[in-house]
Length: 444
Image (cartoon, rainbow, N blue to C red):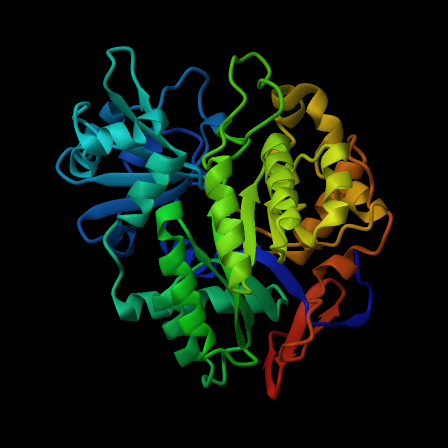
């Protein structure tokens, strides 16, 4: 038990979430518990699993399946040949699609411009044709091009997501995949007496050519921000995930001849930094591998030397080398870590990254270097849970990760002053109630 008796915490904070997707995935086809891929072929389907004509699911993990199973479109075609299918992997960085989906995405024709644009992330089978396994940019293209939900359904996802965060005790969240449409929907929720969330918003920039548009959208939305909803800045994915072996490392993945990938170039990253900081907005980079974080920090330092400065956020940074942490000291940077990722990654992390394991989950190294950081969940990739993070901190310390030499609650507390004040009451590790501003909810 972490909290015996009654305890109150101010502004309990999940520093990295995907609010809309938390609600959506909670309503969607959940594949996380599937131990045999044949269950996918025989599953009873519900109306809420569909996006338009597309069948959509989330959470599969091939590490739970029989050894040697290969992700291939033809397997899905056995049951789903007449509709497009898109199933996201548990890490949110790759997907499994069927033949109909590949055709509609324009990926089956290897001579097409669409295929050429995303070819590096479209896995081919032994015959040289798309297998149905999409990674990084190809996956994100497919995900963002699924038919949009109705406004009513979007609102329901946001309401459900907010309830999930509240029941976990969180009054403050940092939303990492927001948009103009979501911002406008969020503003409509504030007057609802059941809505108790202070939210920071970051808009995703998929390509450097879109940065001016994203900045203008952010600035326009900033005109309507209030003490409940705050516009912060731009979110960019510069590498992938360790689970999909697309996070950018400084050496090869064990047993392989590749070290992941940087999705954005130096020139493009610097352009985003310059343009965003000039407009007094923040930049958040998804950078999971040690080399991705190192490169971003170095490029940010070079932009600083031009006299252009601002707030940099590094998301996940699951592996950080000492020299990268040292380089952070000359810039304004905050890291956002998710201890709960330990539960999924511990099974293969040491084997997969080799000697870099000694730099994994670097919360204690950051603390000693006095680099600010916050804890979050990456919901819905992991369940939003204070207790999952606290347990992960304990378990990881017993298995080779440097123990955090401080009270972990310090890193789950919202640090900025421009917010509605919140409180969470916990009794014997159970969330009893939360309050935010003049609103209150009781759960026990």
